[in-house]
Length: 166
Ligand code: AMP
Image 1 (cartoon, helix red, strand yellow):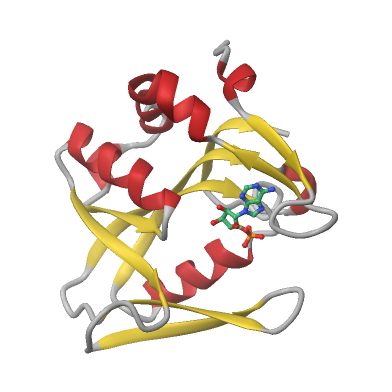
Image 2: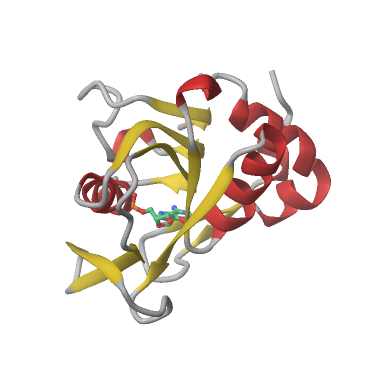
């Protein structure tokens, strides 16, 4: 397979105690084009109109995938970054809540969601809800890394495309 794993840094207790942070920066530095190709490979691009990138590593990966496949790019941002009119979705974190936003969309479109790491799935679920309320049909989700032991996305039948699974 790929030798991608050797370029991923496992950083213990970042950003807080108990989390092993998967730092993909060295991998992007050494193998960016191959990573983008690998993330794009299994998706049926004929049924996709736009790539939705999730702030902020989803911007790096999603924008490159959109360019490779000739699709438009839509950012999902943290609260307060996009000018109105926006649609918001809040979701529970371990402590408190977080809010993600995207511009209001009226024209129906089919999208693929892109982020670097799928962990508990809270972020992706929030973006799925956001898209559902905003005329976007989620056809696929593309991750560089799926921490499968932390979520049940595949078991629940979600169309998850991931390059590395732990
Ligand atoms: P979750 O909502 O729990 O699936 O977390 C997903 C979001 O948090 C993604 O945007 C990831 O970039 C980030 N994230 C969560 N866990 C990790 C981890 N172990 N290493 C790197 N990023 C992570």
